[in-house]
Image (cartoon, rainbow, N blue to C red; front, top):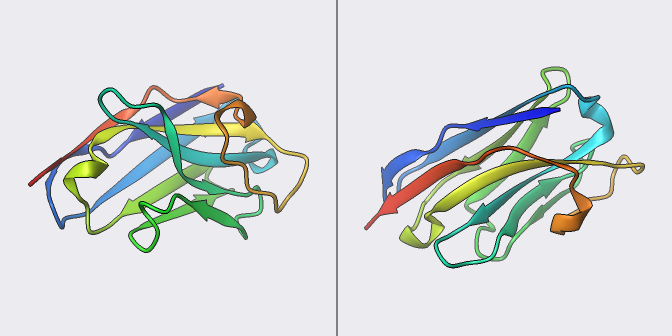
Length: 126
């Protein structure tokens, strides 16, 4: 299984980025997906998650209204659209995939995910 996250970079506060996660080696439609992030000296936290079907999503309070998670089951990919970025969004962002029996359940705990990408760095300057 391989998850490749890309799309990170340096952006000014108020700007936007779109992260992509390309998945291979797994039956993508059978996996819930999520984006986690880890800032300097911080624990890894879930910022957004999406069910197998794509119908249900979860967002951390800190990103609600600014970030949007989506998935393309035909293309084996997940995305995170990040708007109105703030310096506190600076972190390494990881995509994760977890085997899910339920089509519509959203998972946001680290131990609910089986596979992780290497991460992509997002830096937001003030």
